[in-house]
Length: 319
Ligand code: NDP
Image (cartoon, rainbow, N blue to C red; front, top):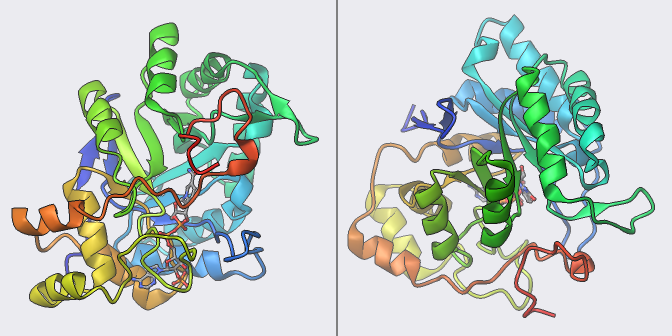
């Protein structure tokens, strides 16, 4: 199947995660507004993905796609293509449910939408808590984390982790709760390679999942101020041609070689198949050096409307 089986990586809790997954967030339009879920394209995408060999699916309660992800997985179980234990499913706790006693109920609601009885990985989506009216909730993340530990102890989540936490927040969480997250999910792509955060996670044995792995590669999605490269970059096209691959595949392969687990999103069958076919070649050191040179510390998802939250995780220089 053209390199389409992602080998697994062992997490610090002894469980395994497939080293590439399918993203299921429909994303933002160029004007910053959300793409609404309108049809069953995510359900189809997850079915295509499972048929193409994906065994790892990423969703979140806020994406409004848990129901479709669950239907696709249950369809494929019914068809006998996979068993529940063959597939790794991640979902995330939304920012309005940070109170410790809210975590297990929020996860139960996700499991109900997914029609599953456990999740492989439950993540705190953001360190930034919010109240229902949009104002800031400053519940200590260590409290929220105790709720995830409880969910794991009850068997509702096999592994637990966090997303969009910075190094200080990870350090403080582990020091105060004595439970190190199994996974950190953050934005990683050619423009935002985060070498020091990756190094920190390697030292702590935290596996990094990379979201928005294509960054600003596609002109239709890139902001006007986004640094290069684009998908037609001649140096990238050269590397892709050498391996008979595409530029998006080169970008994904680079992340895999950094030890990052990319979760590319596509609802297009041919691209879903293409994106997982990155396990039958490897880059040279010289090629990796070139790819490294595109790092600009440029973030595609800075969520500037939370910049004044006391737990805002990112550098404030875009402001
Ligand atoms: P991606 O970098 O995955 O880019 C998705 C876009 O790339 C879509 O427009 C898709 O188009 C297009 N695309 C995919 N493959 C190809 C290809 N081979 N050639 C050309 N175009 C392609 O961005 P996302 O922001 O969606 O990130 C991926 C996932 O990460 C999300 O879906 C979500 O699961 C997760 N995420 C998590 C966040 C967090 O806070 N924890 C934040 C953001 C994302 P099309 O679908 O039309 O084919």
